[in-house]
Length: 470
Image (tube, rainbow, N blue to C red; front, side):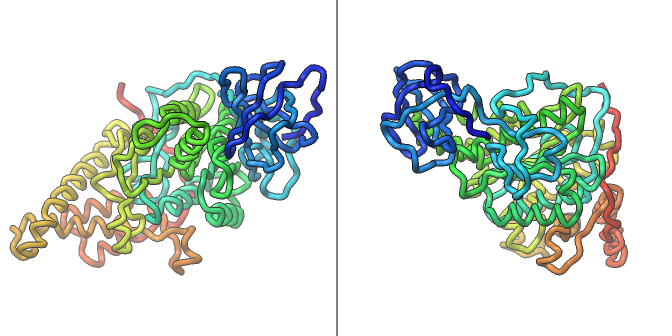
C-alpha cells in the first residue's frame, strides 16, 4: 500500500482516545469514515488503521501491524482507500503479504490492485453435466477422496501428523502441468515451512505458475485474518478476468478462524460455543463462498485443517468440514506407526465417491475397503484379548487384508526426499486400483504385491472428463 497525502481541510476525522492491544478508538469529530476504510495518522504515513465498526461517536479501528508509534491524542485522517493486493500476470512467481507488499525482495507492484474486502460479485456455478478428475499420484487421495475440479478437499489432523507435508506433495504433483495456475495461502504457519515450500517450488520450476500469500506465526491476528481474503481476491481475478482454472491451497484454514477469534477477544466481543465468536463462522462462510466456480472458470481448493487437541468435534473443525466436499483425516496413532501419509481410512469421507464420478469399479472397491477396515477396527479389541489365532479363517483373512491395505496406502513423498533419502513415488489411479483389487482378492503374493506397489514415473497431472448422470 502506498501512503497518500490527506487533505487536512476535508479528510480530518478525529483523535485517538484509547489503545488496547491492536484496538484503537478514534473520537469522531467530522467526516465519518467507511467500514474497512484505512485511516492515516498525522506525521506517520507508514501506519494504517482499519475501521472495524462504530460505537457511539467512536470508530473502533485495528492497528494492522501493531505499530508502536500510535499514541493517544494523535490526529487521524481519511485515505478513502481500503487494503488492496496486486492481481494479474505480474504476480506470477511472486510472494506477498496480506497488505499486498512483496516478501521476495523484488519490485513492488503498484498498478492493477484490488480491494480484498470486495468479492467479485460473480454468481457461483457448478456444472451438472461434466465433472473432471485430477490425478494427484497419491494412492489414498485418488482412491478415497477423488480430487474433482472445482470442488473442495480438506486435510484434517492434529499437530505434527503431516498436514503441511501432504499439502506440499499435492502442490508438487498436481501443479506440474504448464497450464495449471496455483495460488498458495499460508495462514499462521511456521516461517520455516513457508521458506521450504518457496524453495521447493523454485527448484522444481513450479513457482513460475504460482502466486503466494503469507501471514505467518509472527504476524498480528489482523494480518493473519486478512491473508485468506487477499489470496481469494487474486484467485477471483484469474477466474473471472482471464477464465483460468485455479488450484487454491490453504495451510492452515483453522488458523484463519483462530486469528478471527483473537481479534474478537481484542475487540471485546462476547464469545459463544467453544470460545469462538459467532462472527467467526459467518466470516468463514463468506471466505469459502469466494472460493467457488463460475461460468468463467473454476477454483479447486485444498485446505489443511488443524484439529485442536486432536478433537474432531471442535465447533470450528465441524464448521469447516461442513463446507468441504471431501475430508481426509490424519491420525496420530497411525503416524506413530511410521506410516505416511497417516490417513484414518474409516474417518475419511467424500461426497464425490460415487459411481457417476469415479466409475463402478472404483466405487465397489471403495465399498469393500471400507467394510474391511470397519471389521478390522472391531476385531482389534478381540485380538488384544484372545489373539489372532482364535479368529475364524474368514475374519483372519479380512484382518490380514486390512493390515496389507494400511501398508499399501503408505507412500514416500518427493518433497521429503532430501530428509528421508528415499525418492518420491507417483502412482496412477489404475495402478492403485489394481493393487487394491489383488489384496482384496487374495491374489497378491509377495512378488505380485511388490509389482502392484511399484510407482509409475512421475508425470504431470492429467484431467480426465467424467460424465455425470443427471
